[in-house]
Length: 273
Image (cartoon, rainbow, N blue to C red; front, side, top):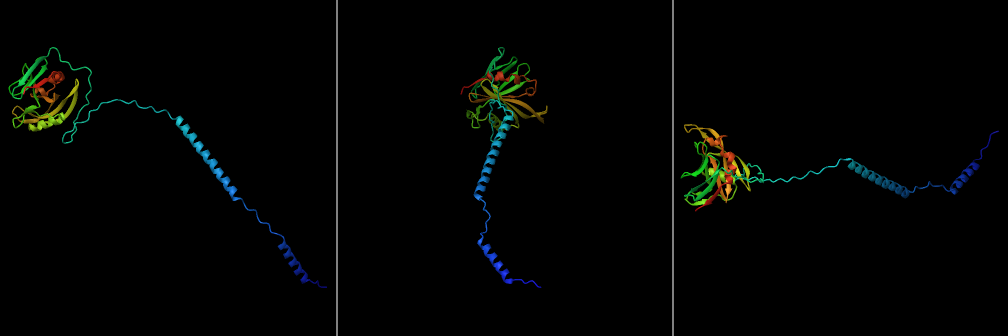
C-alpha cells in the first residue's frame, strides 16, 4: 500500500513559517563608539609624548653634569703696531717695540761734539764713545774712530736744498720707512732695503734698516753685494740718518751699532736758518 503525500499541507506549513519569520524582529549588531576609542588613543599619545619629552630633558641634564668644566682663557693684553705701508702697498717689516721703563743713559766718559752746516743751517750735537768723534768736514757730517778712521759713518738729516736751491725740511711726517726708500731712489742709489726693525728708544722709537748695497773690489769694479745697517731717527719732525761709509762699518767689528741707542739718545739738533 503506497504512502500518500499531502502537498497542500506542506505548502501551508511553509507559508506559515514565513509569516512567523517576518513577525520576529532581526537583532542588529551593536555599533562601536568611535568617539570614545579616538579619545582614548589621543590621551595615550599625549601621555607617551610628555613622558618621552621628560626623559629627554633628564638625559640632557645628566650628560651636561657629567661633562668636565671648561675653563675660560685668561685674556692677555698686547700692544701691536700696525704695519706701515708704502705707495706700492709693501708692508714695513717691523718688530713690536717693547716699552722700556729704564731710560737709555749716556756713559759719563763720553764726549759731546757739536757740528754745524752753515749752508743747510743745521747745528747738531751728539755724544760719542771714547776714541770716536763727530764733526763737519765742510761738505758732510761724519762719525769716525780717531785712531785710523777705518770705521766711518755718514750723518745727514731731512733738511736740505731741493733742485731749485730752496732749503727746507723734506720730511712730511709720513712713514719713515717709505720716506727713506723714496730718498734712496731720489739719490739714484742702487741700494735696496732688505728689512726694517722698529726699536724702542726711551719714549720713542728708531728704525734699524738693513740695506743691501753693491760692493767693489780694489779696482772699483762691482764684486757682489753687502748688507749694512742704516739708522733713522725722528726728532722735532726732522729725520736724522746714520749710515755706514767705510768697509769696516759693514763688518761685525764696527763699534757704532753697539752704541747707537746712547748716541741717538744724546742727539739734539736745531735749525739756524
